[in-house]
Length: 244
Image (cartoon, rainbow, N blue to C red; front, side, top):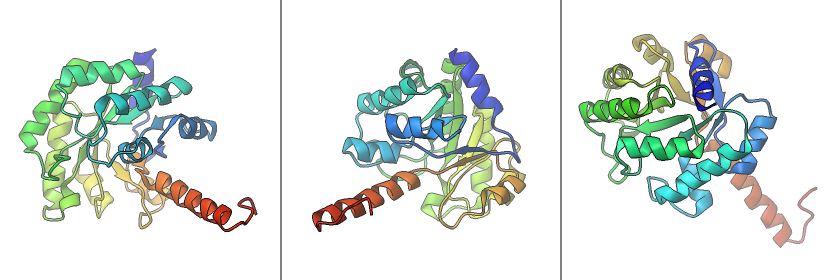
């Protein structure tokens, strides 16, 4: 079953017909996404961290993060891909073993150090991804996040070079998060490209026309849901009916 779900997830990465992933944060939101008709459930590490009472950036103990992923995978039939930041310090083989044990068949892995925000050497990251691929075989769909644009000092050429290197190392998809021009990067990278959808993003139809293969929402939906909850709590505190 794991192999079938991994293969199904991998096949959905089609440039020009992107896989749309409204990232979830718990079992309830995962069920809601599946019931809305989405074919894949993706977790968001920042949202899960906040739900569990931790900051983003690998502040969540790995056992708690993987337990949350396991609860999500348990309640849905759809393939689950998990945001596991940079692996929480686990060796590739242990990371793969523990991640597959949750029921997930995909993962995001980023190329900046969560503690410092500094970019990891691309060769080091490529070696890490190659070891994850070797340990997982075809059981895990690897989405390699490229953090070039988070720091703001590097160029699109650097992002494209990193992305190509990660694909050569065995990644199934690359994720140049916050890329200012997804069309140029999609054209420069011979492989599936993931972009993050945010307030200023092109429409989903426009991203499809650019050749994007995957669209993630990151922590944005959780942030919106939380803001709405805060509004409702305020109405209750003021003595209003929150349902009106």
